[in-house]
Length: 277
Ligand SMILES: Cc1cc2nc3c(=O)[nH]c(=O)nc-3n(C[C@H](O)[C@H](O)[C@H](O)COP(=O)(O)OP(=O)(O)OC[C@H]3O[C@@H](n4cnc5c(N)ncnc54)[C@H](O)[C@@H]3O)c2cc1C
Ligand code: FES
Image (cartoon, rainbow, N blue to C red; front, side, top):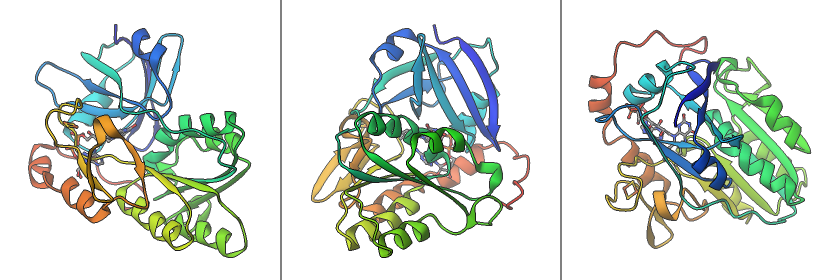
C-alpha cells in the first residue's frame, strides 16, 4: 500500500504523484483531502485528492518547505509511509446555474475535481486561472476542457494576459455577465480579493481553505478558522467554507505563525524561477 506508481515534475517545484491506496480511492469525493507522512516522525502534510482511478490517488504537490521537499524527492517505486483519508467534507455540488471558478497557482489542483463535479451537475462554467508566471502554470488543458469559457492570466504576462485574476473576473461582471455562484481556490490573499468582489456583487462564494493542520482529526485545534461568528475546524468542518464570511486577515496571520522556524529548518533552496519568485 502507498506505493508511488508514478512521480514527475509538471511545473516549477510542482510534482504530480500517483500513489496506490484503494481504500481511500474508493471513498473519495470532490473536495476531500488526505494527510500524508513520509516517515514515522515526519510532519503531516494535508493534500487535496485531485483524482482517483484504479485504486490510486493523484496528488499534486508544491515544494514550499521542508516536508514537501522530502515528499517531492520521492520517485516512482518508492513508498509513502502514511496516507490517511479521505478527510474533510465533500464539496457541496448542485446545479447552481452560471458558475465562476477561480484557480490561483497550485489552487488549480484542488479545483479540478470540483470543476468536474460541477460540470456533471449541469452548470455553465467560466474558469479563470491565474499564475505568477508560466513556470507555475499547471493543468491548463484539464481546466479548459471542463470549462464553457476559460481565461488565463499571469502576474508578469508570460502566459495569458498580464493581470491579477480578480481583474478579468470583475470586468466580466461589469460587462453584464451574471454569476449565480463562485468557487475560488488559491493563496488566501487571492481568495480574500475574490471575496471583496463577490460581496460587492452579492454572489455566493465557496473557498477551499489551507490553514496549518497538525492531526487532521479535529483534536488539536491548529486548523481553526473564523467563519461569520463561528469558529470552525477546517479538517473536519471544511476545507470548504462560505468565502463571504471567512475572516481572511486572521487566517493569513496564522499561516505566518511558524515562518521563522520553517525558514530555519528549510534546506538551501535552488534559486527562484524566471519570475524572480
Ligand atoms: C486541506 C488542505 C489541502 C491542501 N492541498 C494541497 C495540495 O493539493 N497541494 C499542495 O501543494 N499543497 C496543499 N496544501 C498545502 C500543503 O499542505 C502545505 O504547503 C504543506 O503542508 C507545507 O509543508 P512544508 O513543511 O513543506 O512547508 P513549511 O516549511 O511548513 O512551510 C513553507 C511555506 O509554506 C507556507 N505554508 C505552510 N503550510 C501551509 C499551508 N497549509 N497552506 C499554504 N501555505 C502553507 C508557510 O507559511 C511557509 O511560507 C493543502 C493544505 C490544506 C490544509
Ligand atoms: S488539524 Fe487539528 S483540529 Fe484540525
